[in-house]
Length: 91
Ligand SMILES: [Ca+2]
Ligand SMILES: [Ca+2]
Ligand SMILES: [Ca+2]
Image 1 (tube, helix red, strand yellow):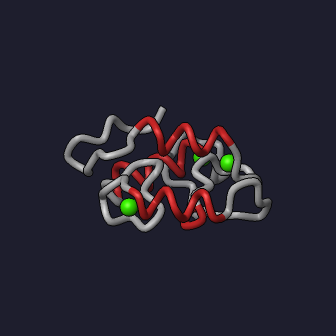
Image 2 (cartoon, helix red, strand yellow):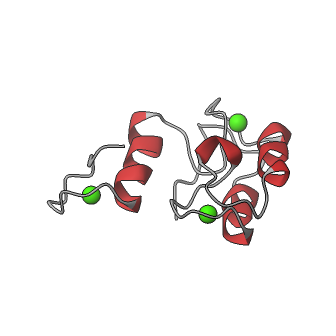
């Protein structure tokens, strides 16, 4: 992970993460497999790993902390059924 947001803090953080996912990869939180579609397969990945620590993006941990929990579920639920053309971006 790089410090891509360029806000001068020199550390990779949530802002960098969002920039990478939305502006560079053209996807959004909720898309575990980065296929530009938030659908059932993303939900399965998240539910399979729910409450696990040390989980990453592909497991459904979208918030850059070290636990996959309800907060991550909300990120997916907010965009469920959306494709990359209708993504509302990261909140
Ligand atoms: Ca940064
Ligand atoms: Ca997906
Ligand atoms: Ca999380």
